[in-house]
Length: 211
Image (cartoon, rainbow, N blue to C red):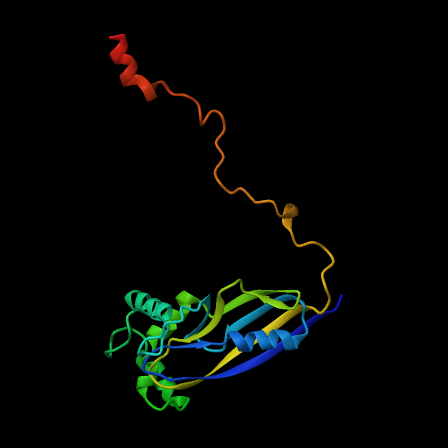
């Protein structure tokens, strides 16, 4: 059975001034199809430390910020957990040494290092997602979309998303169903001792009649 690895890089342009959500579902599907891999996985990973990858439903409605409602709901929650960096000193980072490093690598100004909120949100949210490929089809369920999120909103940025497809180019012979597809019962199971009668269940009632 042949094992194959197929990689592509997506170039994206974030707008700045507010976090950007890029729907890259169509591109990832096209990459999976072009890979020739029938069964395996695809890893969608950010090249950047202030960006994340999310698999979620498309909520269709778009507001005046060009964000889907579900995306803006997520941003509102992240702003409560990790507030926007709006004033110098809101966070410890960046310190003077890091600001100097920014100038050393030709950043356009100290303000570009005031993206602590983006770094922290990326840490909380994660920088990659992995999906399953079954019979040449990306298994995202009925409603899944793939989004690349750029949390860094201090300026417009060119961004890179890495897509790695790994697996076999052949069909799988065995049945995928675990235990013939029977439903797995994960509910708690009580033994007889745990279900036994206790006299205190009817103590008040019994005492009243006995008295």
